[in-house]
Image (cartoon, rainbow, N blue to C red; front, side, top):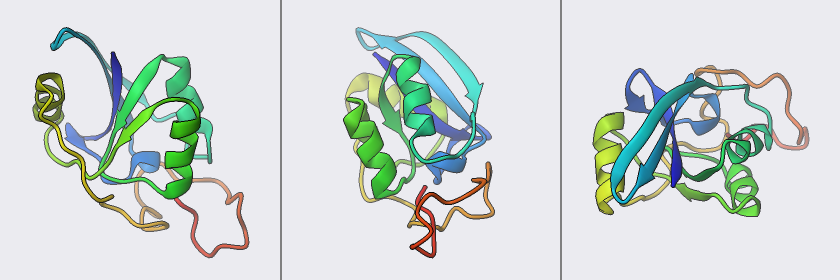
Length: 132
């Protein structure tokens, strides 16, 4: 199974859409087969879920994401695990062992502004803040 983790300096990023990069891990039978880091291709609604879907990712792990992003991942059949923090290698180990437990999103809509990759424009101008 391919898993993507929002990454910032070796740690899980709290803001999935604006993280500097993603760590993509291929796990088979509880073992890491391949691990690579890819730059965040840009924060625009629906773009990152499609980007990760094209890389055959089946699960996204992050600190937090907005409801719209969660919906995009759901539509593509990608499981989203939010509420995760810590070192990337520790998170990979917990996921591989089946002990990783998500929780409440660590960021609220609009709270990622000014962090990481900035979004160029908002597709829902009727709302004050854009969701991650």
